[in-house]
Length: 323
Image 1 (tube, helix red, strand yellow):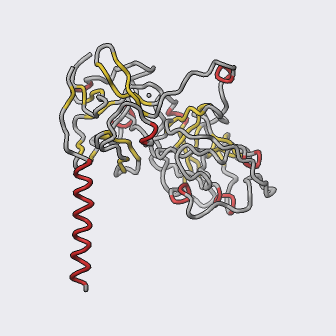
Image 2: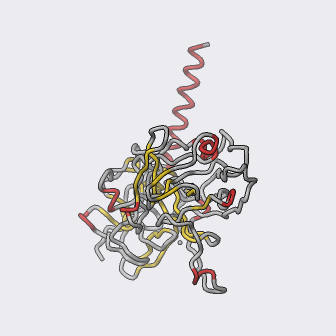
Image 3: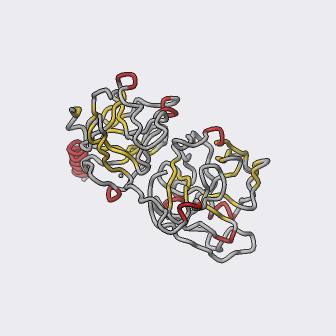
C-alpha cells in the first residue's frame, strides 16, 4: 500500500510540474522594433460595541486577511478607488486602515485584545513605500506585546478580517472610527475635482497596452506607468535578481486579477511569491516592475538602464531597443 501511495504521489507531482513547465519558461525571446488592485469599496458601518472597533464577531479565522495577518505588507501599492480616492494596499492588494483612537504624534496603537482579532496589526517587516509616494513616511511603532507595527506618517496600519480579496474595503467607516488610509497616512477621500460631475478621468485596467511613439506597444499599469522586465531574472524557474536596494528603484508590480487586464498575453499570468515575502505579478512567467525614475504616465526613463532593464511587449517579451 505504501509503495502504491508513493508512486501515486510521484505521478501527481510530475503532472503538476509538467503543467507548470507548460505555462512558464517556454519563451525567453525579446521583441523587436490599461496601488493597483481594484474592486468595489463596500461601505460597512457595522454595529459598534462601544469601543469603536465595529461588530462583536471579531472576524473569521478563515478570512483571507486573517490568514495573512502576520505577514509583512511587502511592496505597498496605491489603489485609486472611485468611492474612496487613493487608498494604500499591501502587496497582495488588501486595503490598509487607520484607527481614529490611535495617535500619530507620538505613534501609538490603541487596538489590542479583541479589537486586534478583528483588525490585525500590519507588521513593520520589510514594507516598501508605494511607487511615487514619500518613503520617509514609512515607519514603525512598538505595540504593547512588543511586536513592531507598520506606520504611515505615524499612524499605525491594520488589515480587516472581513476583507476577503484584493480590492475589498469592508472596513471603511466601521464604528465611525476606522478608515482606509491614503498614501500620506490621512483618511482616504476622493479629491475635489474627481467628485465633480463629469470630472472623473476614466481608469485603466490593472495592466493594459499603450502605443509608445518610440518603443511600440508596451505594457502599462493602472496608472499608465511603464512596466519593465529585468534581464537577469528567469522565468523557469521563476526567479527575481532584483532584491534589497534594487527594489527601491524598481518596485514590483503587485498582483493583478487576470480579468483586470486588456490586450496582454494570458499565458503564464501568475503571481510570484518572492523569497522576501513580497507578492509580484508576472507576465508570461517573467516578474515585472515599474521604475521610480518615471514620474508620470508615458515616461520610459527605465528603458535600457544598465543594459538590463527593458519595457515589456503585450506578449511578455522584453523590448530590447533604446529610446
